[in-house]
Length: 185
Length: 152
Image (tube, rainbow over all chains, first blue to last red; front, side, top):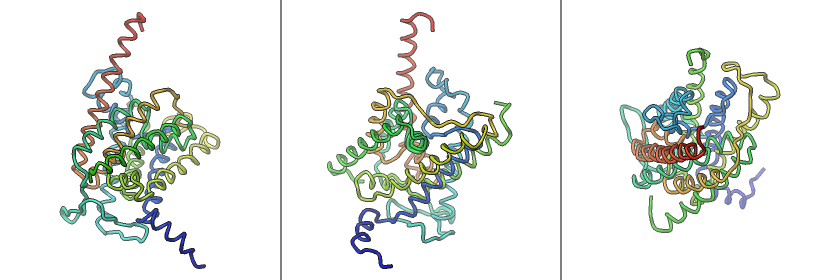
């Protein structure tokens, strides 16, 4: 069967890096969530870690309510960091090559002891200021891209779907505005 | 906490490892790729979010029906349902500004450290600062409320 050229061109325009790295990465993110859920019944999100970890150093009631989960949330975050490091050591370093992974051209690759690591070009002020908004917003809004986006949408929760639509629209408007102002990257 | 199942923490670690590997593989740990989605240059992110949500969706639908209780905690399987109020819209909008400005969200920021992106510490510092600020405000407004209302 010959693929429709118009459809093919549209696909290349919408997905210049293909879809396999995104779809497979997404399935793995879902699988990690499901492994924890099937063992413990916990639909884990990533942003509660911020407040639960603050409970180690601050007595504020808002943080102390997460004392009972703060130890496993540290382990979860440590696992995320190590899992991403394992990705660097294998796929990003070229030890495992697959046609399902498009390396892409964003940021800077650098080598440390045979390990291929990656660094962003996005300016630190964007990361810091954006991070402050992310820290405030995810905690007031009851979830982030994993809590609302993955677990909440997976639960067909109307609250989460509303949350995702809200932060998605505002993020698109913000990113387009920042780009239009000539800030890059 | 000492009465936790011995496999509880190892399982959380394994789940985190798979989750973090997936964030690396999908390039969500790269702020540039998220910004490319938000600027309509590459729509791949849709496949990440829905790919993940389909896996959780099927599991969250079937587990409560087919399985009894979670083996390591004895807890009932439930969906993640949060109550809706103004905060979902207000917080979601604030998060949206931050995500659109930086291209990074909490889970992806942790994974970004793992792929070697030391610069992401700026974003992580910002997230802790933001979480701390809202926690302080809300802790104080809660205690102010309970003072007005008498004992809590």
